[in-house]
Image (cartoon, rainbow over all chains, first blue to last red; front, side, top):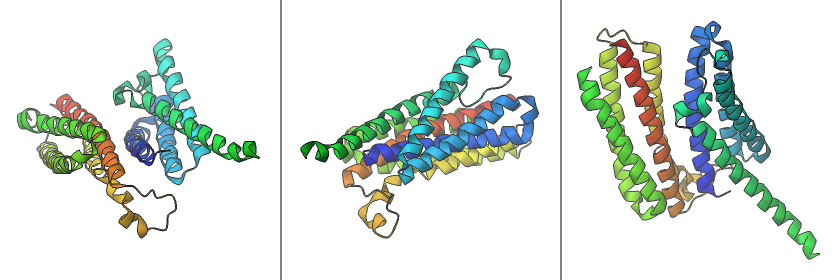
Length: 135
Length: 140
């Protein structure tokens, strides 16, 4: 992956991790009983952002790929459920409204990251298969 | 409160807008990196003014959620550390670090990394400031 894109993704995930970590730790420590599911989901999203940021830095491509896929699935699931079963969500999570409170960055970021990670994986697979073809 | 909503908050938003625009321009034209470096102190001043103004408001007796407001203030200061992060990828900086995952960037890549970080910080700082405004308005 282009180092500029990689570092930009790391910075974006670090910022999201900071935001989600701050929000969820406050909510979980002060009012978990009011809305346990949304607050715990915010906590999970914070942990996920942190794992993805570290995976991108350490070049753990598999972890980053799985992490971003889980993140995208989470944003789509929570976002959709928020609209069709609003009674399940007494308060907002980071992923509510497909991340609208965060400028839809939680929705856009995993898409961009997945595209870049899959392209890198494909390029690496093509590069490793080229010598065999030549043989 | 009026000083915050009328002066400090708009100042922060203008600083964020300048940072974002110059960041986007630098992404396209890395030679504008020098201009981007000049706009970073503007963000520091705006964020600093916001910290002082909000702390003054919080300790003047306004009944805002102090933990949340201070949390956002800390976040606004922490974000500033990401400005100019490209310097960590210069060959000189990477030479002293044995971490094999540390990227070594060319001058143009350093400019682009700084530009992308500036755009991200500008958006995040604007959102954090908006959240602080909501907390203060709810308390007023």
